[in-house]
Length: 365
Ligand code: F6P
Image 1: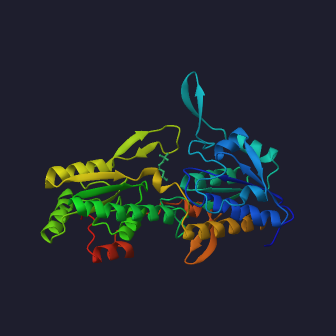
Image 2: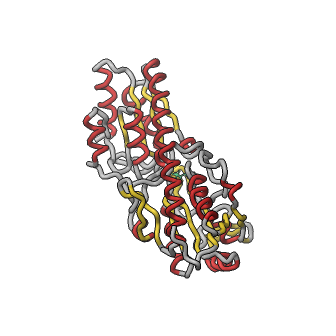
Image 3: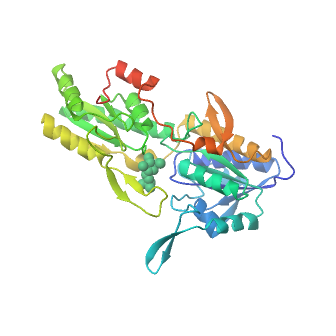
């Protein structure tokens, strides 16, 4: 590792929703940093801690034994965007710009660089703080895998593992009772979790936002399977999936978040419509935050550790405004703005979709 004498003190935070592998990154940053004479300050609860001035020193003992632990030892928040900061005023939530408080704390803590681990929201904030003079390095995380400029984000593989295991378990009960079981998975506006989880778990129908589906095609697939002797079906539906003649299903709004929309409910709708239109007994399972909790898979542990090490290396070399990224089997670095130029969505004719179709999985087209 090449160390610049100007980089002595590194801040680190985890922003947005948590996911498996965050602690592995924190460890991957802190151990090499300390071995190379740098100190690491852990900022509590993501950007909220940066604005409010909450942080603690991270020493070797703090990061020992956390490789396999889910969540984040630092805490996280998806309501701490310094440029869209919710405060309570006269009993009402008001959104204000607190970026100056973030800069003030960064300077007061004598940080030479800040490593921010997060998804697209975090990378947008990194870019703006960088423009205001902070030395930012990004690490891409999200179970959704929807960040451009990296082949993968860590956390995705762990979420896919949960979906595959759930489908395996639901398979046996669906086939025993000759039922249709609909499994709603996360992913926001991208279908990566449903596609990869559905492929891994052998779903019969996968519904994703990038391929709006026809209700008739969904019913047809279930009835055709029955004609061929398969009296059960598994449907893996992404929370952001929508029918050709309808809209995304929204569960609620939270103005404290930069993107206030909370998705959820498509699973219930799909199950109800299938039961009404095919008269086949149908059940629904919403996997929700099970996909975000728990221990990272070995793949995610390795990716997160590499991301952590490469992030501290970037900081030490004063390569600011960059995000670590997986390209093929190599860790590279890209401009943070490249990661947020657009959302990485499933191309409707990509290799995984074509493979799924080739083995008989319907996308409701
Ligand atoms: O971005 C990760 C994610 O888990 C999405 O898949 C999901 O829509 C969202 O976060 C859920 O957010 P929350 O934890 O705030 O309910």
